[in-house]
Every structure is written in structure tokens, then in C-alpha cells.
Amino acid sequence: MPGEKISDLYLLLLLFLWKLKNVYCKPMQSRFASPNVPGTGEGFFFGTRNKKEFFLSLLTSYQSEVSISLEADEIKTSIDQGSVDDSFRFIFPLGKEYWLRQISNAPEYFHTAIDRWIAHNPPGSERWYDLRMSAIRIINWIAGFHLFSDHSSINEKFRRRFFKTIFLHGSWFYIFSKSRFNSNIEKLLLLTALQFTGTLFLNSKKGDTWLRRSIKLIDTAILHDDPAIEPYSFANRIEFYTLSYILSEKTNISRSTEIKKKLHTLYYSLSNVEGEPEIERQLFRYTITEDIPIDKGLMTVGAILCNDPELKKRYPHFSEDALWLLGAEGFESFRII
Image 1 (cartoon, rainbow, N blue to C red):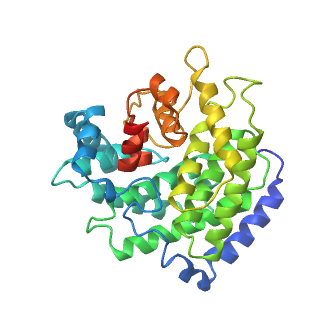
Image 2 (image 1 turned 135 degrees about the horizontal axis):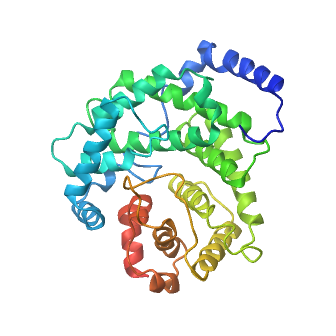
Image 3 (image 1 turned 60 degrees about the horizontal axis):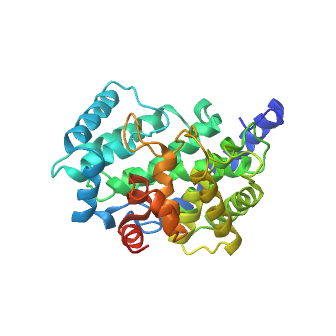
């Protein structure tokens, strides 16, 4: 839960009202019937729009096809055994296998894992209260939808149940978006997830509200971050700042020039930190073991976003972070910096 500032009695009342309004009221059904995103990757970072020869070639330059297949098989075995990582950070390793193999049952496993989670975790149940894990899970669910959306198993019945659950999570995140948290990381995770769900349901009034609030609070966090005070303090937060900014660009949501300038400052400061800052990847994991340090992966993204030749010189290799977050357009931008 977000800190210890909210009493148990208040939470019980909040949960009751939330269920009454969002779970039991039938008018809510129409709000998630037509999400804003078609599943092609438009509006987000990933999708079938990137299924190009050069993309698949770059993908296998980071990890061999054999390794990708072995990791996917390991994930499928876990799903078969009913043992699934609650964060769903296995989405990208599973998605990569689906993209690389001509015949793959990865989408069915995605479908099975989602259905099983929804069946065992009704709205407002215990796992919903872990806001950190819920935020990571929902962000990866949305990524998974784009990775597998063109497969026949992602049918209308699945989509309705899937989108309804994400919509309810968005409403849940919104309740706590102005609460006090034990850590900045937990708060930024929730706000990032709120921006993702707001983007998904931008056609609805609630989705627009979620999007605006999340961006406003994330921008406040960016502008107040000061790397000069503690050089390492912002390193674990730059992942959320970066994803939030790129997602805004994809949906043509304007951010002030001060935000981009501050991002540039943060990236430049991180590039000058002596030693290797320990940065734990919070959201996407491109392999099961995740051996590549997140700062090195994101530095390439920073060089592209800020059009910075100096950052490119320091980090000259197009990273897998840049591949997934910026796609073909990012590759072309990096090439000409």
C-alpha cells in the first residue's frame, strides 16, 4: 500500500465505494468496449509495425534465436505448471519467440496466463493491494497485447475481459495517485501505469483524466529531481521519466520544453557518474536473466531523444531498449546523429 498514512477503516470504505461504482455498475461496460489503441503499436512503443527485416536482424544481434527459444520454452513450462511471475515481466522473452518463429504457440500461453490471473484475482482482492506489482503487471499486459494482438487467439471474448480488468486497474491506480508513498519508485510506478492505462482508454473521459493527472505529477517529479545533490539518487527513476516522455510523443501529448531539457540534464549527469550505478530494471525485462545494465540500454535512448552526439559517442551501440521503445524511427535517428 502507499505508505502508512491511510487508515485501514478509510481503505475499507474506499474499496467498498470503488467496487460499488466500478465493478457493479453496468454503465461502466461501454467505457472499455473500444480502447484507443488498435494493437498495431501505434500510440505505444511496440507492435507489428516493427516487424521488419532489419528489426528482426537487430533483435537476434542482442540474443541468439536458440537462447530466445529456450527462454520461451522455460516460460511456457512455468505457465503449464501454474507458476507465473505475478509481474508478467516474461512478456518480452515470450513475445520475441513469437516474432522470430514462423509457427509459435506463445500467444496462447499469454492468453492462458492472463485468463488464469483474472479468474484467481477478482477486483479488489489481495494482489490488487500491491500497487508496485500491479503497476508492473498492467504495463506488461499492455505490452503483451501489442506483441500478440495479430494472433487469432486474441479474440473478442478475450479482449473484453482483458480490457475490463485493465480499466478497473486504471480506476484503482487513480484513487491512490495523490496518496503519500513509502518511496518515489513506488509512486512513479503507479503514475507510469496510470499513464499507460489513460493512453489505452484515451477515448473515454476517465482515460483522459488519468492521462492528464499522471503526466502532471510525473512532470513535477522530473522538475524537482536534482542530480547535483545525490548523483545516484535519480538513476532508478530515469526509466519512468523516459517511458513517460516517449509515450507522450507517441500520442502527441505536448510536454513543456523544460521537461525535455531536464531529461537531457539527467542523462548527461548519469553519463558522468563515476563507477557503475546499481540500477534495477523495474518494468520491461528483455531476457529472463536481464544481464544488460539498464543505464547502458537507456543511455542510447537518451542520445536519440536529446539528439546528443556526445552521448552517442559515449554509448555508440544501438541498444535493445532503443529498439523496443523507439523502433525503426529511433534507429534512423540514431544513425544520423
